[in-house]
Image (tube, rainbow, N blue to C red):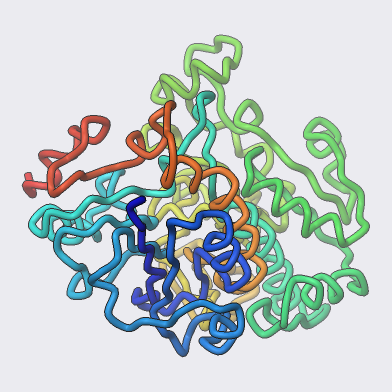
Length: 404
């Protein structure tokens, strides 16, 4: 039987990410489940699980991973660290033609690398098998609450990344006395549901979109809305979700009715660049634009939320947006400004919790396909390049790859 060697990469993206695809216990479980598989780990002083924790679990630490068959990480691999001819699995962020990773894709092709991307590992119903989205929602909502406390002076919260784990983070919310705030969450997927988990710790009422719109004086309250509440057909046709997904350009925003009675927006919805923005930048100048804190978990730069002009960091999570001059300001410098949180690696704030949940999905849903039979072609459908060539599902990236 051919033995397969899997190397767990040290994360190299800047700013640093402390997550890992396989924590020590999960790595040991892979070795136990698959006798023909050997997991080794590249040492790291930044990882949320120490090298000693891996040693204690019986996992070998190995700096040079060039003898591994698969190299598995979380975020994009630093270009100079790519090893020619290898198979990689990580979040590549190239399949949507992200300009900032064009060089990464070009180097992957030049080095004859096989690249599979977690984001495109899906089941027969086209549902993702593995993601950090729930944790992005959990932590993003917490950061929104932290910003509200700092902006209003009502309370102070210890940042999530300064907490040992989620339990310590949540304990702060269970004691929080929050008032006079109307919180709106957009979306209905993993990210939004994660945000709702955090907000549920507050013990304040959750009301329907109709109640929210019809009773703008009630606070504190929480409301969650779906696309049918913030987008409408340009011709006045009834909203059809499937049609919206397939023809987003046929729709326009009707979000204004919410922005006039919302204090904190938690943006947790998926946004297609062909679909309408929630609002246009000039609309923020209107006196009836009441939003003062935006936790943009989706973090689409210059996308659905026009005030999200850049990603923030775990170390420096907020900036203010002057809604009249439409420009960035230092955080919490003006009560009339909108405070924005747009961290693009939120799960990294609670890396141990997020990594452990991620690894369960990797073990139960992905490794059986990666290491055994894959009759549904799960791995192939997520493979962007194979031996330096674009794989069939991703041939549309050819012009992007060539820099055209």
